[in-house]
Each structure stands twice: as structure tokens, then as C-alpha cells.
Image (cartoon, rainbow, N blue to C red; front, side, top):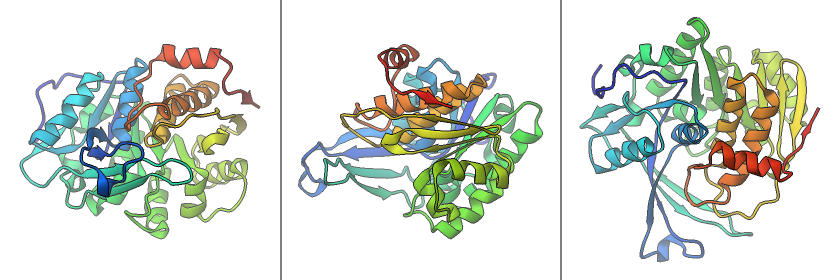
Length: 328
């Protein structure tokens, strides 16, 4: 395959696939237009999930298309530092690495995020560039609506990957709706997302995204039932921000409460939740999905940057301290 790195025998439990950008952030209290210095991090929904899972001890690989320049190498190198396999990155000399600029918010002022990702290398990914054997060798693949929103080729790629995984014996798929209004309209998102849900075992969404994309107006429990009955996803989890989350697991409703938070950085908390949900899914344990999701999301709020660097021991300490309760 074009651009494949060397470690061709690597096999992992989970594969994630999507775009990661360079993140430039001003410090709290300093607007971007006044900033003289910017912190440089990396951030992308699928790689955020990959890092969080790797820190929990799950073997995980991340696939994307990166320009072979300092920014592309920065992304790959940082992910490798956290134990993520980057051997299936598609390297190219064309296009660009997407960037985002973050101005942290403090109540009542929300954070401001400015994306500069048009014509990125990742947006040109095509299915035939992927090492599909590597993907199918994993137990589980995680995909998101963000990747589908990047381009027509990425939209088809997500559908084809999900379909191939489900055709393979034992493969499972999780999908986070992750609606971004700056990338596409609710109508476009709905058409694309619906086309992939038939292949999804674990569906994750915020309640706000369910309302926008699926035009649903009601309780989270009812949203779970609607999505499960309409699209056949065995596990559906709806996150509720500070109020926790609700899940419907093969017909059984469970709910987890949220945590009291001192917020350093909100960005990436949803991805941290998704990682916890996948961690429980791999064990066929809905209670672990909800508890770990809520705990990782809470912990992510306490650190700067997109990524969750917390270990299983960190999560267990928070749970032992009397955090979220599961309600059945």
C-alpha cells in the first residue's frame, strides 16, 4: 500500500480512523487576537479515543493520511509516545495538515475554536489506500461522523470500512455521531449517518446531536429506544454532559450520573467518554462502559489539551472515591 510504514505484522485489538490536527491554543484569559504565544498540541476525535484506550492498556492502532512534514511527523510521534500503533498511516507529499486555534473559555464565556482544515491530506483518504487486512484483524473499529463530513471520499470510506468489518467474522463497530455544524448541515449528516448505522454495534451520541441530526425532541431514554428500534444498534449510549449518560443495552436501560467538575479544558471530553464506553463494550459490560465513560470524561476536563492521559488505576481511584452511580 502507498505510504505504509514498516511494521506490517502488527495486530491490535482496536483500530480508529480519522483526521488529527495541530492545535494552537492561547492560555486561559488571553483572547487569540491578543496572544503572543500559543501552546502546540495535537487533537482529533479518533486519535483522542486511541490515546485514551492505549492508556487503559488496550492495544490500538490509528489510521489517517498525513503530510510527510514536521506537523505530520509531530502527530505520528506524539501518538506513538502513548503506545498507539501508527504503522498504517498513509504518508503523502501532497496537501496539508489541518490546524485548529483554541481560545479557552471561562463561564459565562464559551471556548472558541477556529478550524483551518480545508484541503487537508486526511480529507483525501480513499478506501483503496487502506490496509484493510490490518483493520479486519482487529476485534473492533471505531468511526465517527466527523470523518464522514470531511469529503465524499471519506464518507464512502467510512461506510465501506464499517461494512467490511461487519462482514468479517467477529468484527464489531462503534460510531460516534459527533456532529459539527461547521462541516455540514443536519440534513447532510442524517443521510450519511443513517447509511452506516446498519453496521454499528455501539452507537454513541450527545442528546443535542440526536435532536439536531435525527430531529428528535424527547428524553434520552426515548432517544435510545428510537435509535435501537429504528437502526438495530444493540448498544446505544446518549451522553448528557454534566448529568451523566443513558444507555440502552440489548433492551435494558442503564443510567450513570455525572461528576462535579472544576473545568480546565472541555475539548476532548466526549472522546474520553467514547473510549470508556468502548473499553466496557470490549468486555461486554454495560456498567463498565458507563462508569468508565463518565469517569474518563470527568478526568479529561481537569487537564489541558485534547487527550485523556489517564490509566485504569486513575479511573478506579475516582470510582472508589464515590463518583458516579449506575441506576437500572
